[in-house]
Length: 601
Image (cartoon, rainbow, N blue to C red):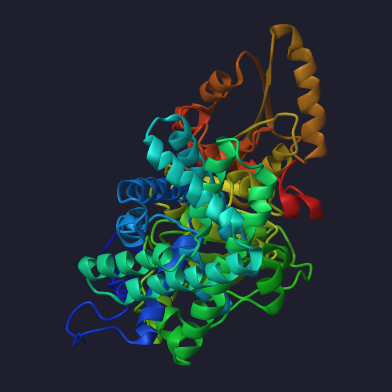
């Protein structure tokens, strides 16, 4: 399903999005015995797009599962070595089992990840920092899983005495191998693993994949080669046995293998297979059009220079900060989100030089590799047609209006990326189960998205009530200032009455609350508003007073309303406790270069 809209409203969008991920037409076409190099590349691009948009937790635990699965390889290799009296052929027969679990099961393995994300990065659809972030998380998960496996094998009583000795010998063999030889052997192992990925995506059935994976990984012990996750598990087992220092094991064994695997996977497979495909390979994997590739600065610096990822469809353009007051309105269903656009236009009309940009964000759970330029044109045309009534609504306010379309796997983060790219001063968005970003799927941590944003945010939960009576609870933070702006907009454009509410702890604080409201109302051009001061708990008081109003405008707390909405901590709070429509306001935040680089300290 391409979006959460009514199926009858966007059948063309669904037709374009719901296609086979195989890289060839799903039906009605002649199917050859094998995929061409271009089609294999398309399938890899599809897989890479899914991987790089995965969340950190999802990536890490998938990598952890893969790392722990390597324990099976180490266990069986050592046990078979002991059972077969060190016969090199028989000992290796069960070595590939852990890798079979990983690749057939779809877990994240670092050496496997040298191919798909690098292919996407070579196309300048993903930045180098995003690639390094992806590698780091997967590798950390792999090593954590391998480390847990080593601990389990050391103290779990799994090995027989003979298998224990064989395991120690395997690890010691790697330590005794000179670093240049380790690197060279690891290069060939990286070549094998990345080559397996290419062949797996070229295979049409599970049996073929199983045979390829088994034979390829059998070549690692048979060729006396080294794989970084297996090597780390062996090394840590030797450390836990008291036969090696951790630093020496990392520098003399694991790091040379890591570098070799990386070079082998990238240079000998990814680059070669990338350049053997035709110049038209991208046209079948991604749409042509504006914003199709990252700029060189974005490719090198990622989010520090703008974008770190290119959506499948993005018809919007990056704009310069020219002083224009820009209001971004992300929508999921053009048919039902007129109230969100109406709110945005009311606020924009209060500025002399303002632009309202309505962006239709279509979320797709999959990344089909069979898109064509005609599909892009169909999706964009359908989206533009459905947004025409919203454009007419905005123009009725005599506000400059722009529209665009984004198709992406990660609709929630697209809101923030679009706001940054378009230099938005205000983002007005709806919230509800019918919005594609209600799932809040994001690969960046929520704190990074919801606590550090450079635009003001208004989140509208529309319940069909009018805005003739507006209630504004007034706290001590900066967001009530934005709430006041919303109230003034409705007062001036719709003649709405405004009530200011101050909640105090005890009745003894009522007089101080009234004085606060008087001063605040004067400062925010709401001196004619009705003022109410109530003592008690904030939530129950707001719900009681809101019963007589048609629109509640809430300001964010220190926790941040965006992150609270995403985490559902408001589900049984004020928002769900009132029957009127609700607008939640949060002021922009600022972050310096250090915070952009390493996040919130």
